[in-house]
Image (cartoon, rainbow, N blue to C red; front, side, top):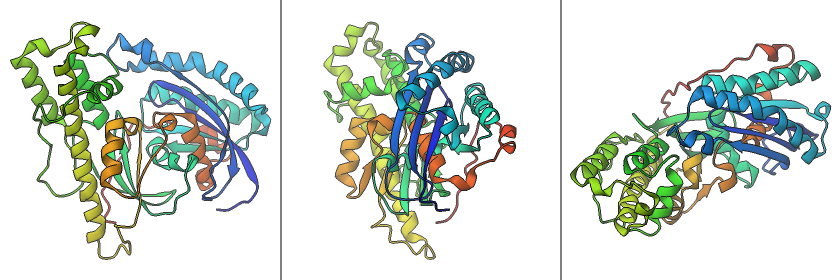
Length: 365
């Protein structure tokens, strides 16, 4: 669907613990020209949820409810846009936590009702990968690696609406492996950034960790054995558990974090190579897998170790910029702009609902 006229899109993201809204301006097509971000407002519940050691859905939903209205008001002021100027709304409807999702959806429905606006129900997994178009120009197809707290998956992306699932994790996501490992180490929540920071100072070869499903062909991941291995190390030497913030400054903790992180990155690298082989082996794909770019998005895509390793191994590797890796309203608005065919017109828009899961079905490329 193509239209040369610029549109103003509101993006609403509340799938987990980040409350985020954005307004962008761009053309309603798969144009490679990045949209203009008119305004972007976010609130992180990281400090609120830290004492609970993770996300508590009810607390997250209540905090979304308190923050959405003032953030929207600030967004309109920052963007110098009136609500009536918005052409349509993109809102995360799946996957995610039901309570948090519904708070964002209800705000979108309210605006749809007042201004008779269409709503675009956004799969925020797809939005994570397509966030590359907020800053880069890129042609389809591309191999997408989504790495976040809740998902780790490979997609062959042939268009903004054609995502073919190639494989993913059989248990925990990469982000979960970081957070659960951090909890065992005693370094708090969320642990991904802390482990990454410590890993920069450590020796990734000091401790040996298993690579899940290393000898299984295909882009299939597993991190359960990695966590068990870390638990065994800590059980054998309980002094490695950090009881105070000062304990994290020990060189052996940096080495342990570096080794643990390297095992996660190595697993992702090996399975990315497997995904390329899978595409190459598909006789009817009509795609030269050596030439299609690799796009990496999601919260774990902000990991510096991952960026360093992948850019050295893959020649055409593009990371979603740091500011758009975690859940954010700009990526939701961007995906809604790129997929106008998914719009639900008013009043059909008022019947939209949330879905907690995304059913992944492997499709041969």
